Image 1 (tube, rainbow over the protein chains, first blue to last red):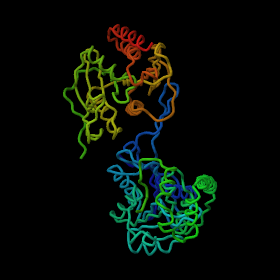
Image 2: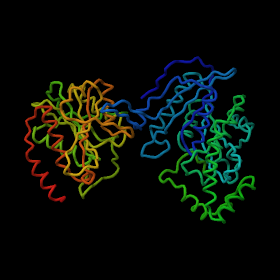
Image 3: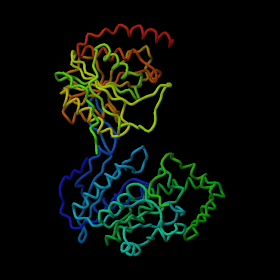
Image 4: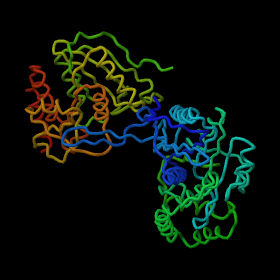
Length: 302
Length: 230
């Protein structure tokens, strides 16, 4: 079980951005897009076979040519005043057939990611995921944050379009859980002495169980990343995907019963929708259309 | 702490044997089980080792099928006279990488296995009266060439891998040549038994390893089944 570094880049106190698939793939799209925009270069990987069953075999004319595993790769980029490491994991290791990370394998994977960060002098790590909220899909998603220290919370408050979990109505005193590796990693990072922050883009509650990416929230997270790094980034690469998804969502919405649609549309005019905006019955009705069954995990602050 | 999953009862006296692997879960047409059971019985194989189930199979409850308890098993047999090592196993549910490496560890380190053969049925849209082709996947071109005269057919496939392909890939990484044999099973016999496919598979092994097996008994089984289906 191990880390394979193709080379050892010289990095100074790099910041690490980590992305895994999750609800709406908000985090992985954000981190991967930033990695692509900055043209970060791959320098290592976590070997997959201890964590994942291979997902594809290629057999041609009776010869086994290749076996493909979900990849877990490290990338790096030196900016003028900041060095960066990216980690992109194509799957979360699970025990027991769920979608989101759980058990010993998840613990091992998270620690391996941090081993690499610490090896290169990383002092801060960001993960990103989804914050399931009572928002309308036409609203700009906010970014909800959880951090490892009071000092970091003060910093997070200065990020654009970002709120703390405690500032969301109905969340009590900012209590909840961040399931999967996005949560586990920042917890282990804190334990190992790193600063850690999870930035979660809002996604409408009824879309959280749909098998759809939600690039609109990834864009919100990316805007925060850009602020953190003090850079301007062009997010037009996500425009096409966003347009297609909006169209799909719009088509679903058009089939809502009128009373459900009316209630849902009211969300657009409420700064922060309260739980009464949508009825339990209507919620079940909506969920039925998107049920994928099985897992209820993901970055779902409760 | 990780414990050694291998329990070795006896180190067999084999001279660079071939390893034959049959899986008894998701066993299309019960091909893997039938072939291995026949070989073990006729070749008077001896149990030599097992891979313990802890960590590889869900052990929180007892599974049963057709009212019979199903206990996950992974046992090695050796046939010293014919220089064969045989594994009959359930497919691991967890930690497949560690499990398959344990298979190869025993085969390589204790038995110096030179070739690997895996056996699984493949569902096919053929009639029960049609001949059964054996589709094959090799991990090395040399072995493919050396088996050219056996009437085997090449498989082409891209998609989710079977456990046999995973084992074949790991064997390749260790330099062990191997082939997965995928005899065709008519789709309507997939959940039952297919003596015709069993016979075809055993005929290949019989010829390949000069086993001198009498497979005549299968003709009656095939005839009886054909009559039943009609």
